[in-house]
Image (cartoon, rainbow over all chains, first blue to last red; front, side, top):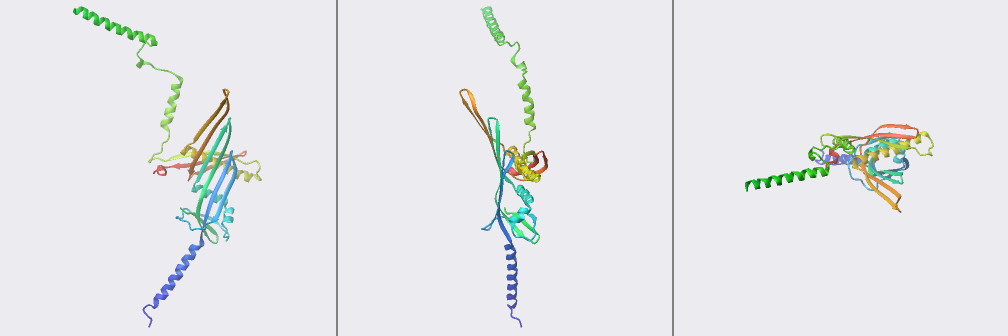
Length: 138
Length: 164
């Protein structure tokens, strides 16, 4: 005859396996800090920088509209973004950029500088076999 | 006695009337001022501006405002291919369009300085600056012709975005 708490151990082990599975799923989703800045001087692109770094601390916030990029099994976000840079930069523009413009006209000669900046934002990145899901956290 | 008082009253009334006529002659106006119509070119120019101010779009809870701008950018001289030139010019044009949107929505700060020495203008400087955050602007059309890229962008401004 089976004891009354015989099923307890079994159910506990099932729960442990399920929780381990869930925790491994969450570990797969990495968090990255991304910033973007570009400078236009006298109507000509002067400098463009996209900084990507893995977050060392857990970010706070909920994932917003996600962007799905193609991936051929690589786990390097920099490489994936470099391959889909136009798509990614369009998505960054949609998030919103800070515009700083300074213009100077001296003796009727004009010069201008425009700086567009995406302040450092945390992104949740899910690496899958054929795609990468990137969602900003807010 | 009565006749003398009446005469005095008549005299004073006539003197007052005479003063009014003299004042009118001195100013060169023959009619009362309320009937005067002034015709000047400046006055006719003011009317369309007033109409323009009346037709200016004001953000309200009932109606959103669509802002349309066209940014321009040029490719650098030292590009390795026409495709690169296009991509760089487009980036510059997008930045210009963002700046135009920021100028329209938030406004421009303007500082001017003139240096005058010995009654002559030595240096005249005008500085303008814009600082804003632009979100949800969309590219409508892009054209690239003879090294100049033009990007038409639009943004929908709604009252709720500015609610505090």
